[in-house]
Image: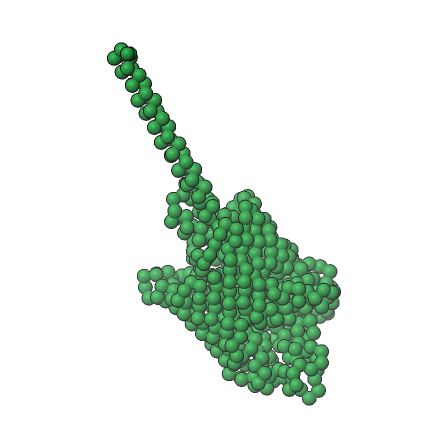
Length: 505
């Protein structure tokens, strides 16, 4: 039997060892909890790269950055994660108030690899002229009257894994027919580019680098920022935008580089096939770029420039230049009031074509003046915590030479075919103005019911009258060709009511 003193010493040693083991276990548990907190955030964060910026003639700016900040506030994150989220481009404010930007704050479904997106745009247009062929011309958004029509059904989304990114959005419905018809570039060469791309509104892939505040390189078909309004009506304050937006590009096909020197600034050069074109019109591609600056949560300034493209089919000596600049300001924000928010947008466009029989600077020996000058302004009101919206706006353009005037689809005319019933020769005059009022009911962030009145006018007969723009027996002969005994009914005024249901998940 061991002495009592020896037993006491043994028990003390055992107790001391157990205490050390308990402390070690607590230390390991603390380390495991810290490690779990550090790894949980990236696994649950579907937008682990920079917020995608795609745009909107328009600047179509995704709110992914805003969503990340909101999600981060709801969970425990490390100081390093909080700093990283706050430094992402434009994540310092909620931009869902912007014209040309989706107002959805959170995706309906998300995952680490894929964020799906579904859009529907179904409308009914009441044209006061009652064209007998129900055909509307002169718009990139509205095409048929007195019928319920699916303007767009888009299915796709954003792919994101590690630093690789991609986006796909389909376009079914009228957009798949009307958008390719406004592009003349498929007339040069083979393989029917208009058919190859007609069901795609966006299709691009690229890579993100963690340099500065982010650098992205993407290639494919992406939405143009020229014109401020988005290609997707859900994102806009109005359904029918003014001519400055409706007559300028909705998409580019090429390569873009997005550089974010700070969290408030984006610089984005483009190398593209041409002006809203699937292919090149001649031998030269187009060059352009955007500067987007948002100094605070109430101001957004975007500058778009395009040049050096030879965008007249078959005329390799005619070069196009264009600048499109917008400012949007939220000047009132009191969510506690019935009238909770007010904002305005102003867009100015100027451009010209030079060479190949036309001149930028008046009628000279080089040819008649071929230019584009226009503006549009909109003011938006939100009521009852964004449940209702009211927008008033409009604008004007002057486009001698008509090189950006949308060709009326008389007897099936397209941008490639042209038509003798509405010429687009150098020096042909075209001046137009419009005004609209839009009321929105938005019971969900994913749904908008829209009612809108539009008045449009031009200095030459342009809009569809009651007699229509289709020959009595339907389209006859080659697209856009002259039909003996047929005269399209074109008017200088247009009045219509637009009613639409817009969905975005």
